[in-house]
Length: 234
Length: 234
Image (cartoon, rainbow over all chains, first blue to last red):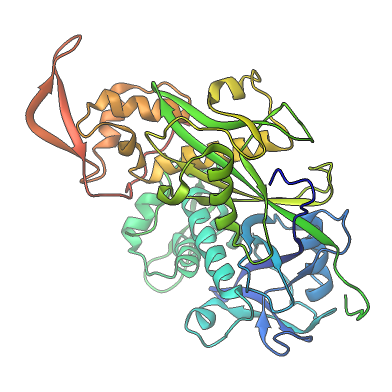
């Protein structure tokens, strides 16, 4: 590569977004129905090409989320998942995609625009079971995003953001179960949740009536990092 | 972006490598001295452009490691760190770099080639203290690689790969200290190391003489994932 006449091959840069939310205690991912070729009519993660050569990659991701699903990304923490650059991943040419992840509660219904014919929250179990097939290598990107999200619940207090201001241990457990895709033992879960000081804070003697005996109520504490981490069952 | 005349701006794709090893109980990173502009004469991570538009990104990383440092990457586990694509990160134009990380014991002396005037193992503390300055955004990439390496030692048995076939707890502790950049309390460390079954296995009554009382000897067990993780001090 010391050859002075040689120039590197140009590639196209795309961005794709894995946006998770919880709806009715089920993990959902934002998918669009492609309105243009290739894969017209197929489900895909929202995304698209860099618009001009001075646009930042993260800025492009925010713009695409706005254009394709009418979701305001300015309030979302987008974290980079990685680059996807297999030579044959896009029939239009050599396209390298940088994927971003966000996990947020209470996101509104998306509204399709731009290259998307439709945009909707799709239950993640439907994708995992193969009932919703994705274009390009977007299933790989989704799988990587899911693993990252599951790992974030181990080391951070993120799960409380998916609960109401006051919540029961059982409600918190259901967030973990929805994201991890497993059933948890309530006693083990309660013990592990208490290992980090100020992860959740009991609300005195307030209890919520329900089936069985009234459940204690908690609110989120100030601790954002779980130490020790609350790890998934092996 | 529904405009049919519009074409996305072409970008150039590069790869960069963060390769860590331990030498004399100090973490070292592979750096090259750039033999070409821009940043000629500056230290940088090994790397370079995609060679042709059918080359895989990981394949390009392996090739660059071979070309610039004469290191055989076929035996290294290269893991992707992420994409670096700030519009102004490279004066030659819009260059997006995909960075890879490898952490391996016993790597040989590098031998400079291609665009590298020199290649050498550089102590990471020298880079962190600002005594070795890096070209482009390579310091950011190195910092991200270091954080990933530190995290890997929390959740995997990787550290034993940096010890001899039989080792003392103190030798294992020094690997953790070198990568984490902290001093650890021997008693806490010993207790935490034993939390994962089959992470390390005691060798009967064999002991190694040294200062103080003879130290027990261990070998690596079969467990590759630490559960619970061995987390850094807060």
